[in-house]
Length: 338
Image (tube, rainbow, N blue to C red):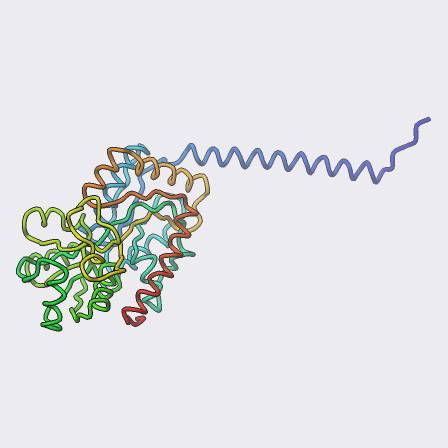
């Protein structure tokens, strides 16, 4: 006669089996949900918030990627310009939006690296308020002069600015913008005292530069290229450590008397914190496909953008590194936290 099994062991094994079965069912259910989320998104148009008025480099980048993603996703990506408060208005609007993947943000160097170092109170947190999707592209700044300024090289500009301290002024898209910090770093390294004039976006700043209300601007090529070609602006230097592929005949500031000078602008794609992982992965994959497309890359390079697709994790680390870098630049430039 076989011994009877211990009732406690039978119950324990039964519970274990049921728990294992339930775990498998839940795992399969999760996979099904995840797969469904990836397949069913998007099902309606998306909104892409650009935290600047129309006309500047970030707006141009935003409209370019929106057009490309619209083609790939099969739904329109609508650009929503929300300028003001050094990008804080648009960034806050994006941060407060539902984390469903239908509201995205073109994040900028100002939004994510400068503001947290220059502003004591922000309505958003550059790290905790957003899910990074991918870095989009970077751009050097060009020293763009109104033709009335009697300088045709960086060395001549420095000499002229030193001879007339406080007389030259430079416009920027706003206080704390990458363009503004580049100008302040220029003042610090060159020993000049050019006066900053902040605007609500690159578009208005360029309009006043062409009109002669400001002397110069540290501007991205996408912002000033057509005006340069029309002879309305003069480009005398580029701020990256190497010459730009788009304008290889324009010398760097480092080779023009300011060794070690290196600054650039960049844009990235983000969404409100909490986007479902399959949706986030879908957005990253589609954006990377766009940025690696040969035709699209050529289009971006023509207007001064250097495509730099990344993973969400790489972009998150990039943001942290840029925050640390600009903390040092702000300290060097002697700017005070507002």
